[in-house]
Length: 361
Image (cartoon, rainbow, N blue to C red; front, side, top):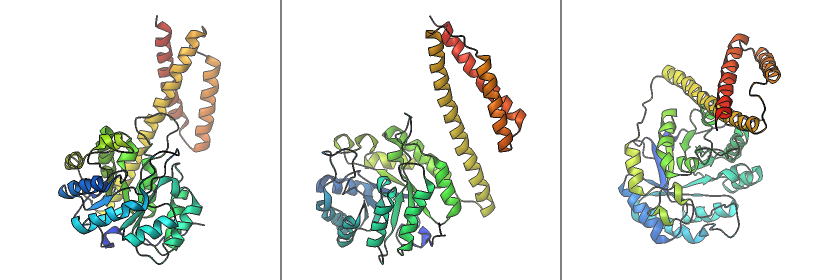
């Protein structure tokens, strides 16, 4: 059974610049060479970023692809700490990574989406970190399972870690969409409501999959009240060994951040109202996406009807649909008339769409 976690507010971590809002963690998807990471870090530092990220160990879907330089890259991070005065972070996926990264003096760890979905690995990481006071951020699992995500954090918390945070990087979509991963913003809102002190970082790079969407996702995250952003930045994204399409140069990243609007906190009453309004916005986005998906299917049905010379209106089918949704509306405590009107409008739009298809030459 889930227990309430003991979480320290990020303002009391003595880690991030307290004047910095939003918190920015930047750096390449992968550490590829000493020259690449240092040049990227130097430009990021010049552009106001104080926490550097780079993947040393890279979990990849297929073998024989670039899986990171491994522990060879740890001295490169040490050089960034020493010469640039930046804090450094990397992804860990097991006890060996923890041991080597701690020995190298890495300042912050994050746990990736594949690892956070595996309770055995999360327990191994928690056991390896027992008695260690270091900030750890946990990315959401690949599937939208909030209890699995919280369970990963609980294992770390039970090991004594209190400087914990989440990273929303989106969830594997079931169908093709604009973004690489589905944001599912409501899961962040659910966690924020349960743990208002939990540091929340958005990873717009993995959510977007393409650099042209990073700005709009980042602004949405700031509008929703995220504490910061983890953005992938490479000195020359075009030659990156991994995820080249979702990385920004340090200069482009700074220009994007300068264009962001950062919302100020209001009173506690205002924040409660804003939380509910943000949830409405998220649910509206979900409704629109579901309606879009429904219209895609309706068009496919229209094409099938045309090719098989079937009439657009199938009255018996529509009567059954309306009967079913009204019954479900009653069970859910929804107004029957309201649901009827909504589904009649949806059905009419589908009929109009399929009629247009029938009239095409």
